[in-house]
Image 1 (cartoon, rainbow, N blue to C red):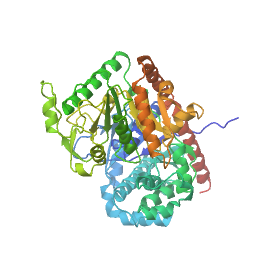
Image 2 (image 1 turned 60 degrees about the horizontal axis):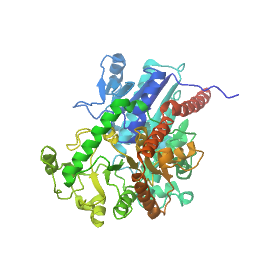
Image 3 (image 1 turned 120 degrees about the vertical axis):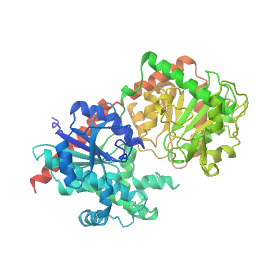
Image 4 (image 1 turned 60 degrees about the vertical axis):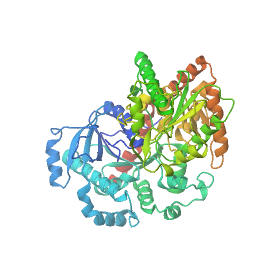
Length: 556
């Protein structure tokens, strides 16, 4: 008979991405928030950095009445807080903390961290100090709240996300031992660094020493806080089996629980609204492409895309562009294809010549200069996408069956060209490609299938492994499953490029009924990744942490 899980009365979650939309962790937290808020209203409390003190944060609505007495008390303790609600489904409570005052205490904080947990901060540089001071401030916030409102009759969990919040978890462990601590690494510092520096990660994973590689790659301090936090918290977690293997080899720590990333289908429009918004998205994509390239696109054009952070190798952008260039030269491709590359680069703003064309009612029949990019880059000669397109002679000439459009900006609705949000444009796609080399989970493919867009991903993405596992480790295929999971390794770049090329060509030839079947299969698969299914893994982590904390406190 299984033991009944112990669940918390209060949960605090700390992340650099609370009310700060910069990466995938934002999606993890913001889509999961409603599930926990429904289960324990206003007892799930998020803590984030306060970057917006002098201007309005559209993701945060301050409520000065909420916990006003505590805010005053916290101020006396040296904490400057703003308390309100995160403007996402569920509208959970958020505490934003100003961490800048703690820079004056930095050396003392790092000294205590070394003495108590042997965390090496001597080699800190870049964003390490900023993240650490926020993390420390977050720990102080939880300590203050606990002392003001709670006591040891309440079961409390503090969950920290990524190395940036490890210091706060260790602070809580030392100064408020009644609170159970959970640490989640979404990607190991060393794993990402090895992959990003062009070293083979997977075939040699067993042979790498995490501490040695941290020194070689100059990430000692980030690795140290990540490693020591993993070893000292009550429950250590990660997001996929592929990252769990990294943790064992590079952090010398087996995760206690794997927490796969879910999604909420509430983000996806339904019925007539879905159909109309899909038409609007396709029309906008075609309008921009026609103005840029001086070419008309029929609605039977296959629109494909990749998106995410601009990590050339890790995200597989290199192999995606290679596959496009191979498809461009392949005589088997009969139907027109418009391929998008939606990754934010170092851009200076929208192209004025493209804006002028988009505001004109005159049909365009000639291409603009560089007719494959929508925004101006500061250093186009150094951009990897631009370089590769030039090297392959991509000109988007009128008779080319496949044309490529590079969108080097965040699609936040205010980019100056599309002026639509990412999810709104995602609706207009027919196929997405995410051939990741390093991808602990992979929200972009999950978001794609949730919006009924079939996708191609790899076995090196946590989502790809999960999709295969749903079928009992049998491979997934586009036409039957809505997802194609390609086997990827350290050394099969060219085979992957050929496979993507062939899948694009094959998908373009599918009859409409098979395309619709693939779209329905994609949506069905996404339904199995909803938070209502995945939240149970979090409950398991809470249970482990609370039991360990109870055992620790019984011996104090």
